[in-house]
Length: 396
Ligand SMILES: Cc1cc2nc3c(=O)[nH]c(=O)nc-3n(C[C@H](O)[C@H](O)[C@H](O)COP(=O)(O)OP(=O)(O)OC[C@H]3O[C@@H](n4cnc5c(N)ncnc54)[C@H](O)[C@@H]3O)c2cc1C
Image (tube, rainbow, N blue to C red):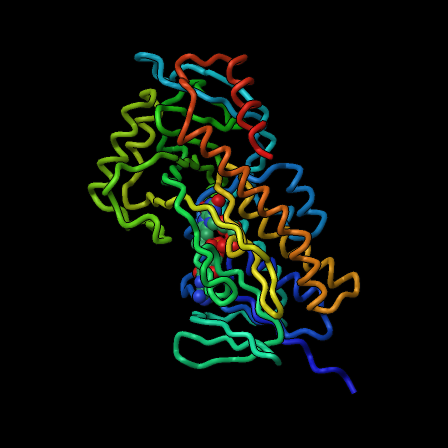
């Protein structure tokens, strides 16, 4: 007689959830029933902007068959840092660094993963409100009050994870003290730039109290778009309570916060100020930056992957890759013949130190570039090199 199938629930159907569903399916093809529960009704692919992934990590994900070679991207080679210089239209370059990244559209990345999930895996629209482990199984309760039982529950439900609340109710994201503003602008809407930057370059515009990062990504319509991300601390009292984990989606930013956003442009060279001014306000989103790392990625039948387990600040450029690597780690343990409890233990041992290290890297980079930045006006290439080495040197 065949053993009963292992019932696996994946909570969350974003990058970590789709990768995890794929990993669970590939790891237990014959004896596993995998179900994904995603609370969002709409398609996720329309809501993201750009994701930069280090080229070496792309090769790793391609080799593991978690990245589709047909997904369009823009190849980046270097990143130059610019700051204001009197009336200079584009500002002055204060430093240049290698930046071997591929710039993807978040939506295409997610869609390619979603498309790889085989028909045998169920992807259902349901919001999970709680998870509880019993001696025999784990009970997943949904927003309509019904519940279902599983052998393993994998929390891929992001920084406000319900699965994490069941495992570590006391662990919450900690507000880092600043916001990330995000958006994209079609290249046809950009101001005339006349050689200020090249398509293979990322640009950092540094100003007192923050910086703006930009690079091209493939647009959803097929034409490239400029993806931008601006880090800066909002004045006290503006916006909601940031220490209560939240984010402001497109259309969710109020007028007072936009006044503050507009004031940030005054510290930038005219070209970049103009670029931000052309951005339709209803398409801008803002997310507070948080630090988070759970003490253990798995306990018993429950495990956390992606942002649910650890949020590394976006300066690291690792959020999406980290989520996929989590899934790959579990798949490879299963493929080595481990059962689910063994695979989850191996996963927690392997990924815990990586998570802690990446969260620390994000904190170091955030301090160096946003909370305690250098005097950019005094910077030149040699000084930039020393400053960057010193900042990275604080990462242990
Ligand atoms: C819509 C969207 C757009 C994004 N866009 C970008 C981007 O443009 N650039 C970038 O760098 N990063 C983006 N991110 C973040 C990035 O995907 C993550 O940091 C990283 O990939 C790790 O993802 P994750 O799957 O662990 O978490 P997330 O991407 O946050 O996904 C968590 C998923 O879980 C679902 N979920 C949460 N709670 C429940 C629940 N109780 N029941 C059921 N489902 C639940 C959410 O709806 C979400 O789909 C985006 C995330 C989302 C959700």
